[in-house]
Every structure is written in C-alpha cells, then in structure tokens.
Image 1 (cartoon, rainbow, N blue to C red):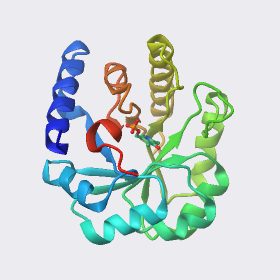
Image 2: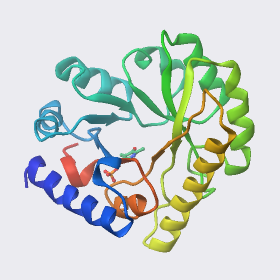
Image 3: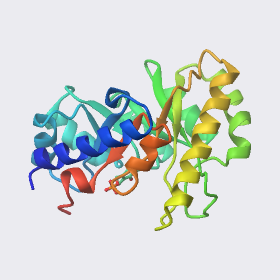
Image 4: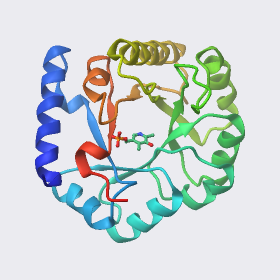
Length: 225
Ligand SMILES: *Cc1c(COP(=O)(O)O)cnc(C)c1O
C-alpha cells in the first residue's frame, strides 16, 4: 500500500476512535515518524497531506529537513543528548523528550526563541524507559520557571510494550490526569494543553483517552531500514 492509502486507513480509524470518545478528528494531529524511511517516503507523506514530521536523531532530522524544508512542523521525539541540543534547537518546532533539568538548561541556553516542549513521563515505571516519574513531575515543572525559553505545551509518554490493552489504556489515563494536574497549576510558561501519546499499535486507545498528537511510524510510512 502507498503512504496515501495507509493514511486513509489511519484517518478512518482516527474518526472512529473520535466517535467513540465524543471528539472531533481535527483535535488530533498526526505526526508521521520517518526515522526508518527515506527522504522520498517522507515526501510522499507530505504530499498525502501530513503536516507534522517526527524524527528521533539529529542527523536524520537535519538531513530530511534540508530536502523537505519548513512546510511541515518538525518534532524531535527521541531521547535527546545534551550535547546534541545545539544541532537541532533552531530547527525544530517541538521537542517531545524533555526529561531532566540539565537538558532544560541546555535548551534554554541555546534557544533563540521560545521552544515548545513536551515533558516526557515514565508512567509505567519501567527501568528501560526515559522520562520523569509521575511523583517528580510537579517539582520539575516548578523548576522550569527560571528557564523562560521553555514552554511546556504538554506531556508525552510511550506505553509499555505489552499485548494487554488495559495496561496501555491505564498508562494513557494516568498521563491525561497528570496533564490536567499541571494545567490546573495555571502557570504562564506551562499551559500544558497537549497529550503526545499513541503509536502505530495503540493510537486508537490513546485518542479515546485524549491524545492530541499521535506519533505514527510503521503503519503510515513503513520501515525501510
Ligand atoms: C519510533 C517511534 C514512534 C513510532 O513508532 P511506530 O510503532 O513505528 O508507529 C513513536 N514515538 C517514538 C518516541 C518513537 O521513537
């Protein structure tokens, strides 16, 4: 199937998940995750109507952006090494992986403008996962006040790798609750209205639980390398 056909199927599934949860499809943005595909395939996604591209490595992002330009919004979705911040800081529209204060300080130091960040949360507590633990979130958010280049637009998580849909749903519900808690703090630098959650295998559940950005790789653009 072409990227365009894949997108039609995904859009249909998004619509159905929105119907089930009383939402409108335009409240969900698709980020096409192009880390495993060529520039050509990423371009196909844009021709099919995709407006957001996600990459998890600085090299991959810069290489694709050079050829594609700034028509789509660029999302950095992978764990971000502090020393790589300078490579991407003025190139990306969103960073989804803010997970420690040293990274926040580097982003603030290097940024020439406000940068939209998602705080990554390790909801499931798996040791292999990046992200701040739910208990430490509020303290972390308060610490960001002194770094005004950072705008906390929302929270991001990756569900645990499991077949158990209830566990996945529980993870997304917790992220939404945490998002609501941060929003209720009413901090000017942390509007925290967005939820970045849901990938190829679990985006319908994520939408039912309130995702506003879903990050779709394999089922949209495939996997070439
Ligand atoms: C690779 C990746 C995705 C996309 O995963 P698929 O299962 O291929 O849809 C989403 N989010 C992050 C953070 C990723 O690294």
